[in-house]
Every structure is written in C-alpha cells, then in structure tokens.
Image (tube, rainbow, N blue to C red; front, side, top):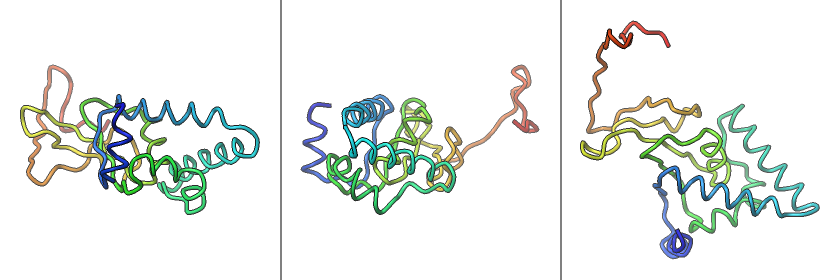
Length: 160
C-alpha cells in the first residue's frame, strides 16, 4: 500500500485490479482529504461529488468534463492518470465505495466472481449496468449452469 502511489505514478496503468479492502482505503483517504478542504474549495468538492454521484445514479454516467478536470484530476494523477477500467474481486464491494470510486476515477469498476482454484473470475458485472452485485456476464472461457436445489428452495422458476 505504501508504494502503490509511487508504482502507479511510474507505471501509469490503464487497468487497476484490486480487492475491496484497498478500494475502501482509497475512498477513506480521499474522503478525509476532501473533508479538510475549506471555503470555496470545500463547496466545489462537495458539489462535484454530489453531481457525479447523482449522474451515476440517474443516468449511469461517471464522467464530467468540468469536475473531472478541476476537482478529480489530482486523484486520477495519483494513479498514473491513465486508468480507464477498474476491477474488483475476492469479496463483495460495498455499493457506496463502488460508486465513489467510479466518480473519482471517471471510469467503470467491474466486479468479478469466481474461484481461485478454478480459473479466477468467471462472472462479471456489466460495464453498462450500474447496479451492484448483479453478475450478468460470463467470461469468454467460462460456462455456467444453474441447478435447482429444492431443499434450499432454489429453483429455476424463482423470480427473485
């Protein structure tokens, strides 16, 4: 974690893959930094975050030319400035952190579900779907079969 910022600045990754714990730490650090802003800068940061989160929820958009350039550019530069896709796995990512990271980095954050001992991620959230925990896409090398488990009341006929 201590070298992550230096490594990203030097390597300028375009894809950032991580676990929820690291994304949680990033969001906490950025929120702490933003909380210490004062005056007009504080107003602008709050307006930018609220605007981007509203746009994400209402329209599914995580980019804003003005706010990305004026408010969030330093955050993105901290990760090399070229990240265009983020991925998360190993545990569920909280909806709050998921949305906040997309707003900060102005790019999609895809979650993966799978097994390390199998092939890693097999199911993915769609970059087009802004809901959380919906694993709708199967990897190109994967195959998924849903089975009824009557004793647990899980059937193919379930609507929920």
